[in-house]
Amino acid sequence: AAGVIQSPRHLIKEKRETATLKCYPIPRHDTVYWYQQGPGQDPQFLISFYEKMQSDKGSIPDRFSAQQFSDYHSELNMSSLELGDSALYFCASSVRDKTYTDTQYFGPGTRLTVL
Amino acid sequence: AQSVTQLDSHVSVSEGTPVLLRCNYSSSYSPSLFWYVQHPNKGLQLLLKYTSAATLVKGINGFEAEFKKSETSFHLTKPSAHMSDAAEYFCVVSGEGSGNTGKLIFGQGTTLQVKP
Image (cartoon, rainbow over all chains, first blue to last red; front, side, top):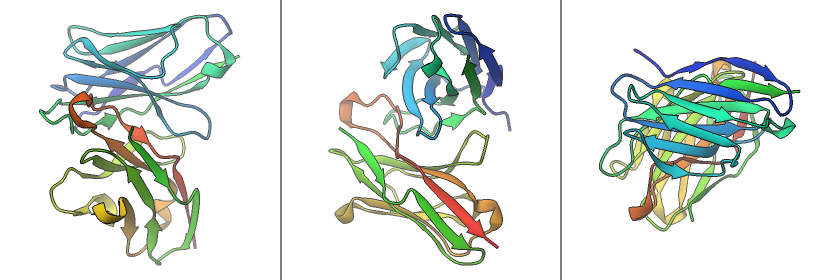
């Protein structure tokens, strides 16, 4: 079965540089979520999109922005990178149900290292 | 606000013995509860999900969890541990009334070690 695809899998950047992370959801999934997992920490919700509109926002820095495109893929743009942005970034996709209890399927993650 | 607390940061068992990973939740509404597993340098895989149907939920790889509203618990169990079960396990909650947008709130994680 098709899974969530994230690219790149690994990314190394310098401080103050920019990075773009991409997420391709499972076909026919209409909702995308982004999570950040710091070293030794649990994943933290960043932002989500439903039908190309932002549906919720968590602890996402103003330096970060994201969007969902017409083909439902999503991109997380990160500017003015800081050392503390080094983390594993997960994308998850789901089919939104009426009770918002849809199951989220996670991609393999993008490991971002900021030097 | 919703939250989950995983009562053990680290659990060590011998292969072939039972596994118990404990999770308590806090929610003003009927929550949706999940267990996800993360193997080293891997993504998050769904083990099982509770959404107010049967209180005993069976998942993949022989895992199951029981929702106990009176105890606000959702403990994960497996009768017999395998070496391949060694991983990080996250108890997760979602769903808070009309404001719910589906975002997941993770517990702190429990590292399961399986000894030969």
